Length: 149
Image (cartoon, helix red, strand yellow):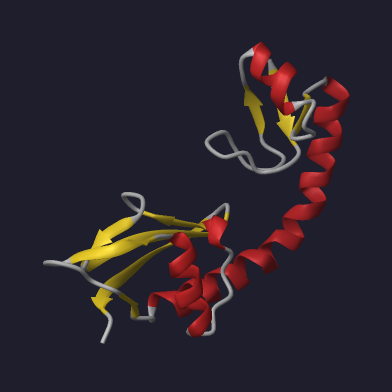
């Protein structure tokens, strides 16, 4: 079943992508929740026209995302956390904590666009996260978890 996505769907595609999914997934989840529509011939023509009109606007958005990516690349992010025996943390550090740390640095990034590699962090050390600023612009952000003073 071919569908046109009306919004970003995790592990499937981005808004306005044409994707093939199994019939049950499309009929029972994507279409009823308003996440997709059937990719009929007329819907594809409408999509092609809107993509053509939006290509010009997307260039500006991509340039802004690249400037934010350059600003993020220059940051050194350190997250302080309480530490128990050895280097084990009380709790964990995840995308919410990283978003808060970036906000302190002056960068407003929504937590859903941050993906900490390996899930949540439970020990001191250096780690990486991937931040998706646009469908074409992603940034690898190294960060360090340090002991709280």
